[in-house]
Length: 278
Image (cartoon, rainbow, N blue to C red; front, side):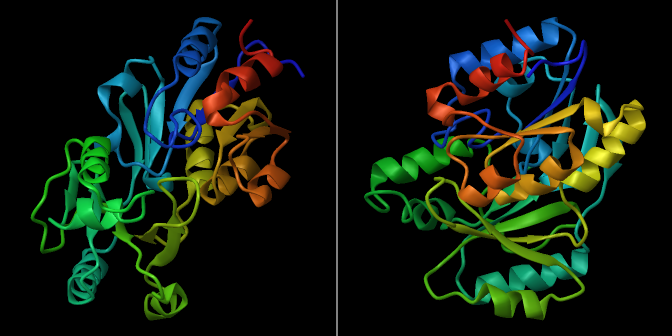
């Protein structure tokens, strides 16, 4: 398969561009830089909010960002779209999360705002449990997280909270029916460890449509790269879609191409197979 002279590349971050230890493989970084040097445009397309796009990711020279699973779109520093959760929903959710003693963080472009118990409860899902090393790993993965959160905000893209065994997400979805979307996600690629309270009708595919309308490019010029269920909307919006080797079977089945694991050069190998780099 070969690429046209110029394509728009949409990269999920966790499990795709970086691995589950939040490390950016040198091969992936080099592939992104070479693709841009060859005239392709590259956008991050992620569940992360803008506050979680750290300098080493911007330093790749990417052209823009789709963040918060589609709640934010930026091109060349220009904000194309930004929509936040209803503050009333955020306030109600925070009250419920605190009452249920669920650790959480509010994902905003201005910052990530979490509860004091978040590192220990998140680390409990890692192999070995909430050891000092695992707690330190989680703190390092979210280095700028602001602790002590006990109330809502009016600039929240979505809310992530640490799951506990037996928590009924279907009941939570029924509680927020018509007001918010309930989902789950994985920080390890092994199992869902986090629940998510997000915006209705907001996903990567819708945001990509906004970006391509702004850019004036057809869907056939888009190539999406991802590893999770949240990437399925991206795949549907792109002419070509690439699932990482570490993706679940349902994501692989929806992709045009399946590449190698993120830790086995998956992104760079896919770029080569698609003719994006030499």
